[in-house]
Length: 611
Ligand code: NOJ
Ligand code: CA
Image (cartoon, rainbow, N blue to C red; front, side):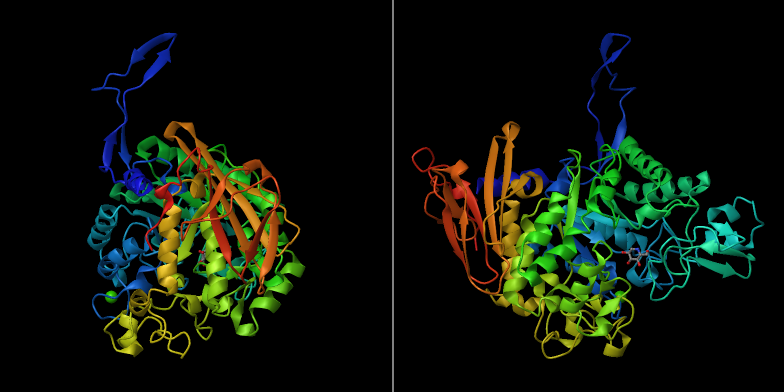
């Protein structure tokens, strides 16, 4: 199990503060060592030891409110989350992304922040958060929190002061005010089911304020340097506590300019560079993840020159995975990957199948959107804004083969997989709850009262648990899936464990093969690193069809190698210069490690994962 040991070493925790090693550098042509006692920079390290840790991470997105209630008030909290960390560690996740847990009126599930530097009392105290952070780090898990800086709640003291302050005053300038709603007129409305304009008239201020999201979420004014300073202060607050990174919410919309779409402006990129520089100056091994819902070429600038975000979500890939599945044709996937540019060395794509929002269809054409609505949202209640508000398992008709297939793509495509809580057990949704809340119901732990989430009377829960005969907690819960070796939970754990044995998934290259049968998606993942003596070549073959499919692959460049099926460690016939035939059952997927021929190399035991 060398790989496993290597992995453990790679992700071991470090002390929270470290000294950057003394370096040799040139001043006026003279080389000297930095004086360790005087010049040495002190940077605060994150909990991971490898600066590129996020490339190998398995990220798990969860809401504290939805995970585990510890005090019976019907609302999940930090002590509850701590009590479930063992579960997450055993699942194999290495990084937790927490949805916003700050003081908030909760009109947008916490993305309406009223105080950036505290914990919502419903979820616990700051001390509880610190205890959670230490407990996560102790388990070698990194922690990612939200930096929602495009807007605040209208209940934030900055906004309360701003609407009262005279025009032109520093307080007023914290937000974007105007006497007219006729500027920035062509900027699209994102929450178009609820908002009619991006401007709202404020009776107190006698002016309009700008908001890209709900009208209770006024946009901060990044033309005011004081705003930037406050944002950096909030960021440092959490970094000093030891969080390992941030998801940058709604990052394209920071700055507005008339006559533009007010998205991704150079001034916005200057702000992101400033954030990154502030992190790099004082901290190590931290990272930022951009929520930039844009086409791949428009996302590229968010990586900058390795000086903006370390990771960006790949928004356009996600709906095309669902499209390829329903059309039984690999083209939507290969086409969007072909449009995906190369990113700087230190950067990574964040891959996901579902999250806490609707399955967004902004990054598809009108025809593709119509198709997705037709294929995946039979009931109009399933639609919201430009998307579909359903969870993974219901989207896939609870078909275990389809769920496994999509997860196998998530875990083997180039990038870091980001899972949404509950999807590992195939949780359902509740389309009768408003907004996107149908996918935010309590985690289903067991078949006890309230799914083991809370001891409160059921009426008191922040949202009802799911109770119908197919998706209800009596049928779908962690405890019963742990007891069932054939469950989706066990399958997911195995896939994560397997992925973690290989660096190629997080760091390797991708090359599509082009077999005649378009219902089959076949791709090579390769990673060659002389420094660590790592050479991994993996062939993934996925059948997107509901029927069995034959496929013939040109693998002649690997003639002599033995494909070894990675889950069962089963050697397949050796590759020759002839087309390599495979037969795939409906929705099945092979991960095959292409090992050197046996005469030069004994089939290595190191690839085996214990099942
Ligand atoms: C993006 C978040 O993912 C979403 O949940 C939220 O409503 C908007 N940003 C506004 O903050
Ligand atoms: Ca509670």
